[in-house]
Image (cartoon, rainbow, N blue to C red; front, side):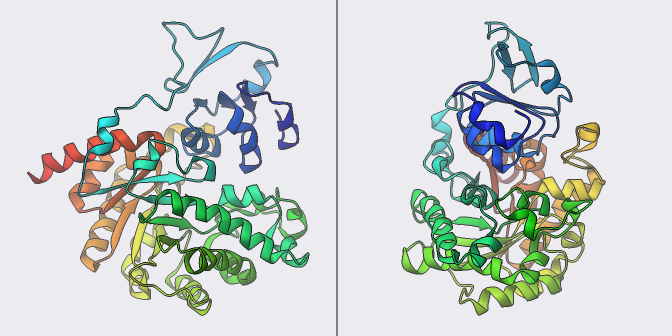
Amino acid sequence: IKSPGQISTLVKDEILVAPQTNPDFVPAMKIASAIVTDFGGRTSHAAIVSREIGIPAVVGTEKATTILKNGDVVTVNGETGEVFKGGKSSTNEATTSDTEYNKDYLEIETATKVYVNLAEPEFANKQPGRSADGIGLLRAEFMIAGIGVHPKKMIRDGKKHEYIQKLADNLEIFCNAFNSKPVVYRATDFKTNEYRNLTGGREFEPQEPNPMLGFRGAYRYISDKDVFKLELSAIKEVRNKRGCDNLWLMLPFVRTPKELELVKKIITDEGLIRSQSFKLWMMVEIPSNVILLDDFIDVGIDGVSIGTNDLTMLILGTDRDNSEVATEFNERNKAVLLSIEKVIKTAKKRGITSSICGQAASYSEIMEVAIRCGVTSLSVSSDLVPITRKHVSDLEKKLFS
């Protein structure tokens, strides 16, 4: 499938083969038995969504769409990154089940909270993620893609209320699924190229040479206040009218303390005030967040969550979605580890919570560094919640007993 316009041709339980995926591919990804892409790395869209759905994926093959043909019978091994001819055999068993986990691990209690990363409402009640201590990263992008229309077009067409209600409906599903446990909603961090894929998007979005470093994150909320206010209205709807006071807000890609200050003013002006039940977190995913963390904390936040995907990319100057340099993308690099240490220690000293929500949160070496420094939570994909609980418990006993 070369474009989202072709996703209707995919039949349930077939393998989705595409150059790369984006949120428009999600309907097809939900019914696929596996995903194979030409481009992308461990933190690309296809890799992230496949982990949440619980199906194997092999990304960055460079030539899957050229070699594989419709009707081919192949086996995808998401553990080894292999795609081979024929059905699965006893010697080459594909990893297809997300239910093969030790249920006893779900009962383990840890001092460090184990949160789950989620995006799709229909997976809100799915185990093993449902047993987490809360949602440490609720991605907005998949819900926005599900609405399908650019928010500015919705505003112009007089459908602002419809947009707010659809987003609120999705948020309510997650909040109810996790009851009183925290649900940390990360405000939309679509880049311009992703917004352009929505209906009406090309009319409102510029074509940028490098969207990853372009019009996104907090700067976008300041420039497009009306769009950001749609999200804030949905949060207020869910918290104030639907009784879900476990919904918190996290701000992504905040480049400067001044940006944080301006965005906070928009939030408070809309009636969302920080309290015991409404926490405001900030993603730490830009080197300036690490270097100036005390200044960001001075503006007023309740917690930080380290987004190791973007942080690693920006510290090492490595495009996380580029298979050509995938081997150079390494969250265990000393510069990244030192940054993680600094953030957690600073947060602890300043009396705010700290979390890690990137893929690296599940790596044992990074877990050990984080727990030793006093991290308050780790947020991982649903399939990794049980084993992460076990690893965290073992590390806490090793470090503190």
